[in-house]
Length: 153
Image 1 (tube, rainbow, N blue to C red):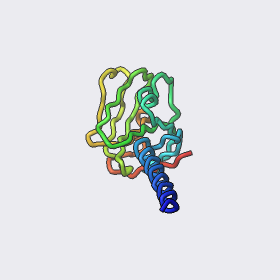
Image 2 (image 1 turned 180 degrees about the horizontal axis):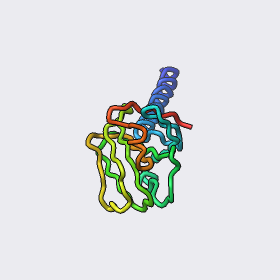
Image 3 (image 1 turned 30 degrees about the vertical axis):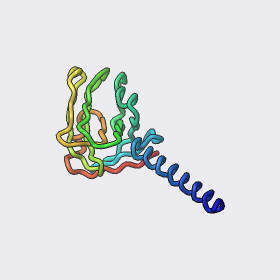
Image 4 (image 1 turned 90 degrees about the vertical axis):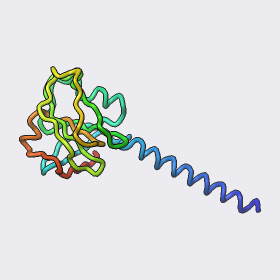
């Protein structure tokens, strides 16, 4: 009986460790990813990944400019109606709101720094949000329903 219990306890231990790791990956997606290429409507942007509360709170605030083909991808653990603001921003932005299955669910265009402390939310739940320079959405023809692809660096 003892020879049977030791492997069984070890197996249960492995299952619990695996379940814990799965849950951590589910709860904190992208936790080890800091950058990647995001493609929407045939246009690719190099994005920094804001995957924790501190990075999401700061965002692009305090920066003087953003490269025309760059952006920031905000990652949340589950879909929601997340609020965004323009705190400490020095240039206007477009926001691309993306669902859990990587489709554009809303866009906010030309959000200006002087709108702070007002917040904006999407019309539908989003799990990801991309901040890019104002005008990018119109220039690249990004619309609701577009499929989005992300490849980590």
